[in-house]
Amino acid sequence: MMNALIARFLLCLPLLTFVTPAPLYAATYVEISEELTTLYRAARKVISDNQGHINNAAIGDKGLSGKVVAQKTLENYQAVTGKNINKGNMTLAQTAMLNAVKQVMDENQDLINEKGTGLKGFLPAIFARQVATKFSQDMKGKMNIKLTAPKKYVRNRANRPDKWENNVVETVFKSPDYEKGKSFYEETTVKGRNAFRFILPEYYGPSCLGCHGSPKGERDITGGKKEGGVLNELGGAISLTIFH
Image (cartoon, rainbow, N blue to C red; front, side, top):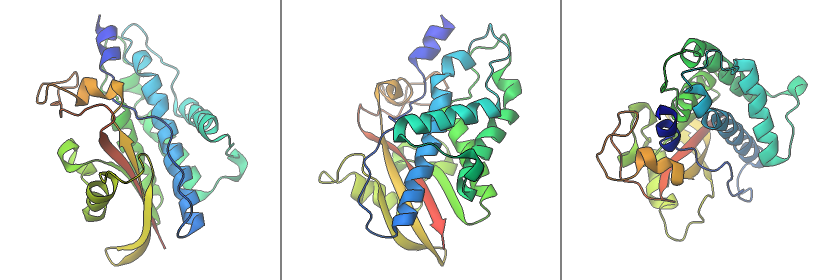
C-alpha cells in the first residue's frame, strides 16, 4: 500500500521537451544553455523514473550508483536530442554536470539503499537542487544553474527567483501571447559582471498535482503544503547563467 501511495504522489517531473528558439544573441551560448538544461533534465528524469524502485523497502542495493545514473542520463539525453555526448571529448560544463550527478548519487547511497524504509525523501527536485549546487561550485564562477519557480510556488528559499528571473516568469512566461514552453534568454549583468542568462519554463503535469495541486494547504506525502496548482500551469523554471 505504501508503494501505491508513493507512486500516486510522485513529485512532478515536467516533460523532457521544449521549444528551441531561433538564435537571437550569441548562438554558442544558446546552444550551450539548451544542451546543459536538457542534460540536467535528463538526469532528473532518471530519479523520477526510479522513484518506485528507490522507495521499495524490500530491496537494499538499488543499483543506482553515480556511474549508472550518469550513463542513464546520457541515454535520456540521446533519446530526447538524437545526439550522443562523446565521453572522450566532453566540454568543461558537460563534465561538471555529469560529475555533479555522480557525486550526488554516490553521497546518497546509504539513504537510497536503506532497507525497511519506504519513502526516502530522495525526490527529483531534491536531487536536482543538489546537482545544481555541485555543478555551480565546480564551474567556479564561470556558470551556474538553479531550479526556480513563481514566488508563490517556491518551497525552498534556495530556489527563490532573483529579480531577473522573477521578471521573466511574471511578465514573459505568463504573458498570454508568449509561446508555451519557449525558453527566454538575453545578455545582461549580474552583480556587475557581464552574463548571458537563459531560463526554461516548466509546467505542472498530472503527476505534479499529487504534491502541488488541490486542495491548497493540505499536506502532501512529503509533509509540504499543496500550492493549489492546476494542470499545465507554469510551475517552475530552470535558470542558467554564463558569465563572460
